[in-house]
Image 1 (cartoon, rainbow, N blue to C red):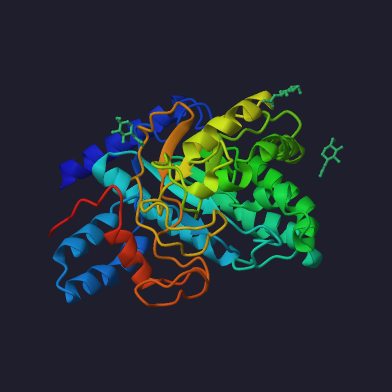
Image 2: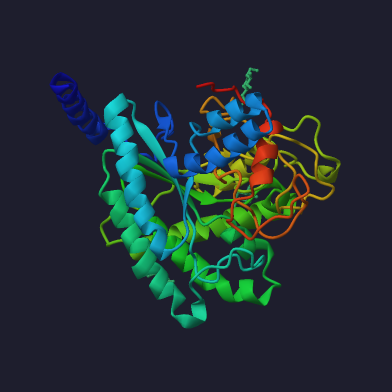
Length: 387
Ligand SMILES: *[C@@H]1O[C@H](CO)[C@@H](O)[C@H](O)[C@H]1NC(C)=O
Ligand SMILES: *[C@@H]1O[C@H](CO)[C@@H](O)[C@H](O)[C@H]1NC(C)=O
Ligand SMILES: *[C@@H]1O[C@H](CO)[C@@H](O)[C@H](O)[C@H]1NC(C)=O
């Protein structure tokens, strides 16, 4: 026991020393050589799924659901009150890292802009621009968020910044609430980028998905909007600080597009970005042209069952299976990692098709019948984990 503790202490010390001399998480693929931290809070939700399969004498799918508990999935920090979850997540990931000696990458979504979800309304947040929302976002959400990550220099973080927000700025300006949201989205994101310039934090600005910004006419405006926000981050650092950087972009967060379509869906007919790899390839030259990094992480958490939609715009609890597992071997130098960003089983909203005859609950609530389908229709199929 004592020996083990000593070894763990030496290991932690050498790990810390290695981290000091590493290039920052912005310059290298931060996922390389890391284990995707799997959080216990999400894992615990799957216990009812395992129990439900067992109650139906379906031992195979119960064992497959058990495997999902060990797959790294992003932790969503979506309100001031959920910032404490960063601290508990850090403690758990650190304990795993010290016990196993395997460096963990902790995956977080940052999602609390004022006027959030301006076009959909299903995921409206706690801040509004007309009610001092931008100042509160900075002081009550971003500042403590950055502080929590700064307090964990021994861990690596991948942070997805504000899913869908810039997509809404680029294409949904005819919606008054989105138009009103624009300056707050830009400045809020720029502030977040500036405050999260830490050597162990890789930032991925959200780039929506191929069916949204992947159309030829949207690629240039998207890159220009991203560049504007990243440049604005300089306003929120001290004069002689290095120019703020992001690692890259996240795509397909909470959506259902495949990494590589086979076959491509008929509704993608006129788009070169008919799957997420093609979207990354379409966007990359526009990013490079704006001196932005063409690195991507792509959510495949619910992309395992293809061609269940009739329209690309369907986004709510679409019939799906768990998709490609998080992996850095992506066969593309543009793609840092396949990830699972949306925790499968959390409802997109009280909308979309029924699952096993049950209608969806409100956004964020657990949709048990839906997650059972994610397990059953997973592609590639989930390996079973028997006790
Ligand atoms: C950012 O800084 C530039 C140059 O100092 C200034 O012109 C601009 O108004 C600032 N923008 C914001 C939103 O602070
Ligand atoms: C790159 O930038 C140049 C100059 O602004 C422009 O003419 C060209 O069309 C751009 N190409 C892409 C792929 O954005
Ligand atoms: C990469 O290519 C290999 C070999 O063809 C294949 O088995 C694997 O599934 C591919 N990875 C992804 C993420 O598509």
